[in-house]
Length: 160
Image 1 (cartoon, rainbow, N blue to C red):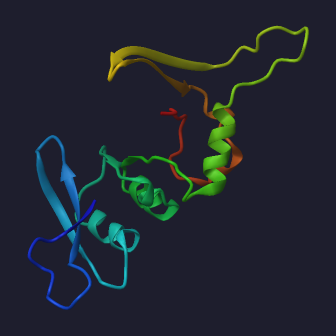
Image 2: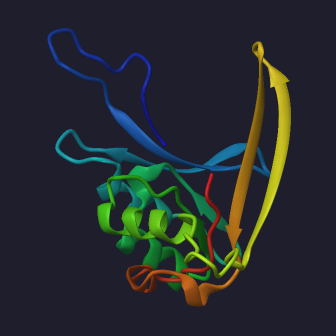
């Protein structure tokens, strides 16, 4: 995640210097960083910072901005795995995944459609209301949209 460096804003300039960091949760420390030039963004800096660390057996996460094929391929080629949220910045992939998790509508007279989804639900009472949250998980990669196969290391997904 890119963060502005404290105290780096110069009077009269618009912004601060930014640094993209890799944080190791198990060690609870930043293990690599790359400066983000004023004319680039995190997508350009991400491959540089990923080169600084061993990825074999590691899971790389990030926000939707990092949901990029090239970054995903770099991680998989180096023996790692990734977990990206998919949002509208990848419109075709987003639409395909929405269709994958959309409920099927049965034809009249044929009854309920069986699915291969596993799901978990949790009911909470808080903030003056009762909430039920259900998270479906698609178990079989064969049902993934064709577009998803263009992504290195793709596997079944979870909708949150």
